[in-house]
Image 1: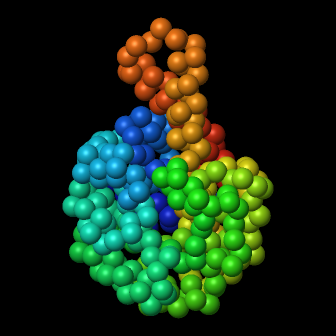
Image 2: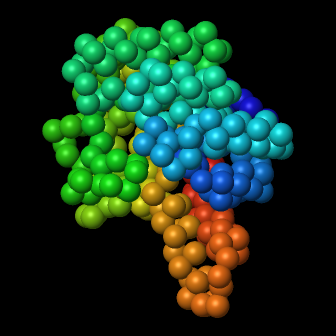
Length: 284
């Protein structure tokens, strides 16, 4: 069934959980995520990032996301991730998504504020909610990572500016930079936990962690305790799909069709996501 972003985040805050937001650009990842949410009976956010639209368009994979989430026994938000323009967010809402992130983090501050306000107004027309981003996290979610795989403190989110941003835009959640990166970590992450507390107190809205793949159990739990309520996850799940496919092909070199490879990929993603949610949905 579908629930709103606010309902999912409220559930996380009430129970001391971090809500998993899993990017599902392929059908294998989508069905794996739904299977895990149903198995653990937890709310989850199914996300489609604009950079993944060349893999499967929001009109195709998005329609499947909405349909499967609606009929599921588990609770889901269906969310546009890293929408870099209003038109893409509008496409998601027209498909049936009920949440979106506008990412203007690399724009000048006032332009980020202006377009984010447009996104908030559009969301209200569709009964949806908006997440935005302030501060910059290195890397991208399309696997074409040009970063060094380490956080850059000069790009961290400023609490005073974050408070001004939330007041001016009326967003429901804020993605912030405090040490995570998109893609693979190429050095041990150094997260600023005190900054998370400052951001949560300054803004009064749930803090979102992007670049959630690759952290330790302890790091996830510390971030949740400090005020992170939504954790975006993609790279390591997709990496698991690739490794599962490679292992199947190595063990079955005679395979000449794709279908059993997709099963191996889906099962590998299920295993990876099961480990994730066991950590995130743990009582504090």
